[in-house]
Structures are given as C-alpha cells and as structure tokens.
Image (cartoon, rainbow, N blue to C red):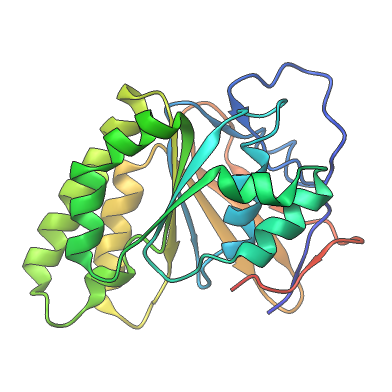
Length: 238
C-alpha cells in the first residue's frame, strides 16, 4: 500500500533541542515530536518501515538530535534504499548517513531479548546514540514453539526494561508493533507494550485515508491528524 506524505525540510523557528520531530504537514500541530526519555510504540497493520527510516535520518540532523542511531531489526525490515532517499531529501551525505546507523539483526525472540537486555546499553554508549529503533518488536515472540506464558512473561520483562532504559540513559526508544488481529497472542503482547510505553501512536492506512493517531502521551492532547498528500510519495510503507 502506498502512503503519501509531505516532508518539510525547512527548520522550524521554535527551539526543538532534544526533540525528534516528524516534520510532516498535518501531523506536527498534533504531535511536535518524540522527546528524550520517551519509550514509544508505533503500531499499524504494516511495519511502518518508511516512518522509522525517516526518523533514523532526522535524528542525525543538527536541528534534530544530531545523533547516531541504533536500529534493532526484529522484522527483517532494514531498507538502506529508503535511508539513502531520505538522506538526500535532507541534504545529508548518504554514505555518512548509513555509517551513523548501527544495525543489529535478530532472528529469534531469544536473540532479540538477549541483545537488548545485555548489550544495548554498551552499544548506545559506544556509538553515542540518542535514538534506538526496534523494528517489529513482538513478531519473533509469536513463534508457536515458544509457550504463550513464556512469551508473555519475557516480553513483559523486555518492555519494562525499555521503559526504564529510555528514561535512565536519556535516549528515545521507538518500537514498531505490527498488528495481527487474528492472532490472540499478538493482541496480548500489544496490550503489554502499550501499557509500558509512555507514547503510543497508531497509523491507520486505508485506500481513502492515511491517519496518524496520538493515542497516549504524558503532555500532548490526544487526537488524530490526516497525512497531507503532496509531492513526496512513499511506496514502501510495509
């Protein structure tokens, strides 16, 4: 499914130090951006790879976080072509933009959990990252070879850890959650993730509307904004 977004590259006048904005027409008035210490869940029936790729680039901007990024790929969604595209739009050197990303791939729930709980802190400090993106955080926990009770217990420990990690290490942690309504375990894990996150965003994509819904936030008023249609078409919103 395609998603049309307007990407604004002109810096805003207000101070956005420590704020990671989407800088998208139609959304910014509702949601100025992610703040240091946020643990955020972005959920959709799709993996939101274009949105996270955009955030990985915008985190590197001097008027953004001016930071390196850790990308933990739990859903095999890493797409360097999208990152290069966004880097060019934001007048960044594509090769340098890719080098500022530390990619960690996980092929099992065990690998994902072990990396985050035992190695994420060291990596964040070593590369001086202020943004951690976790792709499809629950997908690997849906493996039927993992008992449901075990999956729920370990996943709950994981999201509790990320909640504390973001706050204590003064970073932004953004995890995407792919909604799978037909899978009972997915619904259970989704509830756990949203309880622990202090920011929850829903993306609603239909043939007629593309909505950004701010569902949970400690400071901003909740609401919904439609993505503006314009010259920037993102074809890989999957």
